[in-house]
Image (cartoon, rainbow, N blue to C red; front, top):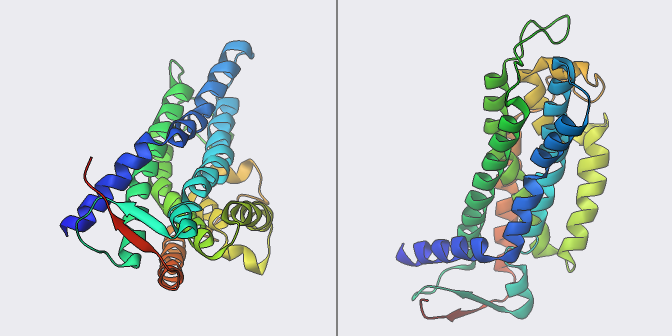
Amino acid sequence: MSAIWALFAFTFRQSLRDPKFWLVVSVLFLPCLLIGIIRYFGPEQRVTQAWMLYHGLIQLMLLMGMIPLVCMIYGSGLIGAEVESRTITYLTTRTLKLRTVLVTRFVAVFLVLTVTCYAALIALHTCALAGRPWVQSMFSSVEQWNTGRDLAIYLAAMPVAVAGFLGVFSLIGLVATKPLAMSLAYYILFEIVIGNVHAPVSKYSVVWQLRGWVVDRIPELAQMNPELFVAGVGGLGNVLWFTLAALILACIAIGRRELVLHKVARD
């Protein structure tokens, strides 16, 4: 157990020290900057415009844009570099099974990315609502914008989104010879194209499942795009099953790859 904790702590520190982590932070907080620019330079916004900006940024930039790309960066290289060089360094004094190394590093990276995405979402929510009385009428069918409800729904979906995308890209990182290129191809073809059309295979898209679950709880989203925001077609449970299946396949894949484990001294 101490070896697993040492690996977890090492991965956690490694993720925070990595220069790409701060690139990820700047990308995830980009919607806050966009809101500031729109509110400062743009015309006075009505509640309807503010509502559409708020949900549009969260849907298009966080759930369907930035979170997948961030998970792609980390997932495709979760242990890919160590596999390619046939080495993996970690701070333990005991040998760990390869699947234990994979799952431990996955959990550590998942926690780092989830906390970062939570911070970005709360910052976006704060920037969008700061100094504005957004509880006025929005659409004719809506009496109030329940900002607390919407934030709670997105907060619930955020860790599941991170887990789903990170699991898929971690699997791709282990089975593909060019993991980043293959992950990008998967994201464009399956999540962006197939995940945004009505087709039998769309139900296997993480984006499709997440969006459907959110629309079930925020039905007003259908007024933005009735063809895209469809209720009753997704669920967080399905994404968790996708994640579990991807991790199981990744554990099988990594068991078939040769890694030479080197013990290193604690820093």
